[in-house]
Image 1 (tube, one colour):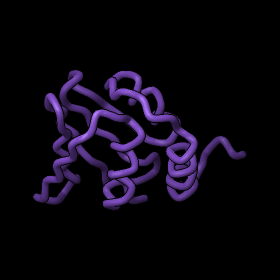
Image 2 (image 1 turned 135 degrees about the vertical axis):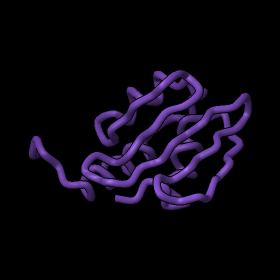
Image 3 (image 1 turned 180 degrees about the vertical axis):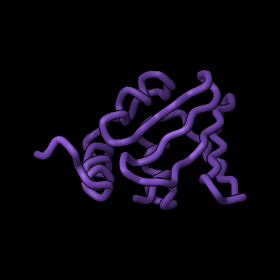
Amino acid sequence: MALNRSTLENYVLLMDYVLKMRNTDFKTKTFLKKIRPFCATTYLSDKIFFCRVRGSKTGICVKRDNNSFTVTQTGNVHEFIFYTDSTKLFLQKLLKHNLLIP
């Protein structure tokens, strides 16, 4: 595999990784470590973080509340609210709603 992967390769690898992932409780730092090979990430605290598929120009800002995630896609005004406590389910919802588009 090449050192510099295309955006589409990172996106497909992320989808494949999510399928193989086990359901685990969501912890921000663990979540960021798991998706870092496929997504560029920055975070201000355990409550707010930004991620985008590597090579892509658009990304999402995620605000973590007690039992939900508020997701805003860069450049869009729309907010998506997901209720989950699992890393796998959260990533599946992001992919299902095309919020991590390459």
